[in-house]
Image (cartoon, rainbow, N blue to C red):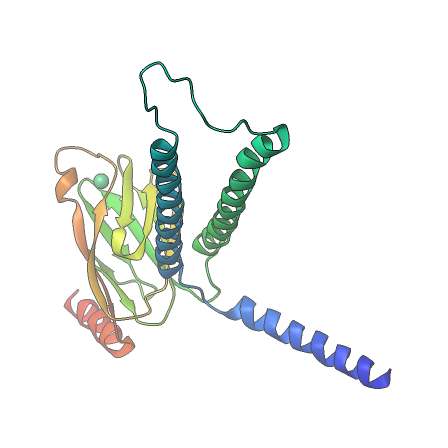
Length: 230
Ligand SMILES: [Cu+2]
């Protein structure tokens, strides 16, 4: 009994420790969206192939062999008929719920800004984005240090815009009179672009700029260089 209690205490302490570790872990929504998307594609492919095979098999097996034929298939009992409809539906629904639950957890991670994220302010204008870094440096390019989560607090000085970075799987409206946000976990070196994703006038399609993730030293040096130029 005493051993049992000791074991239970150890288990619950372990569980608490792992919960804390989980809370502190910075997630990577971009990779998680990617994984979820791939799972959806695989699942609907498997379901589609099973359905197609069943349909083709039944089309051939129960096909009419003369023009006035009514059908030769054995009549299903009520239990068979209901089971035939409900069992596959229940299996597919279980998969749907599983995917929906997974989507919900990724969405929560996508919206929950990690503590200590670097805050960069974004202001949208017709037709460019301006970034203000924590040290006050202002420039028209987004650079992030690898391995440190970054939160963008965004607003617009004129019309509706949208800050979309497909490579990081983030996209959010940017509006006058409101502050919206997205956050990014730049886990590796990367060079990509942000594109305005809300039609905002004549040069909307050219409202794009460089987004990159670089080592911390490079980020610091880059900021220092811009600050020195100003
Ligand atoms: Cu725009």
